[in-house]
Amino acid sequence: MLNYNPCVCSNCDGIPGSTGKPILGLIPCACPPPRDQFISALNANVAAGHMVNNTPILAPFPTGDSKAEQQARIATLLSTLQNLRGPGVGCPAVSTVYGQKQQEINALPN
Image (cartoon, rainbow, N blue to C red; front, side):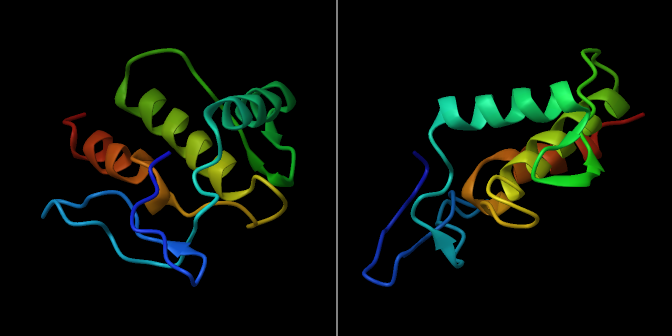
């Protein structure tokens, strides 16, 4: 789990940011979900071609290494995370490293 500094308010700090300190926010301490639950949800979304819990959002998962394919995969990871339990009901990106990975991918040359 990537939860840091759980408090009595049921919120946790996010992953360490560029300063090394946790990104503060209202992150449910249940986030991110256990790896097996996340992978199961991701597989279901990819198999369906869209978010099972938010059908207008597509779930492409290309296997190549181009920037566009990496961006598509990270978008599907983030959408899965953010729609785990229903439309917009899930975990925020800052509860994982996926947001940082997205920035790294976006910074790659075309």
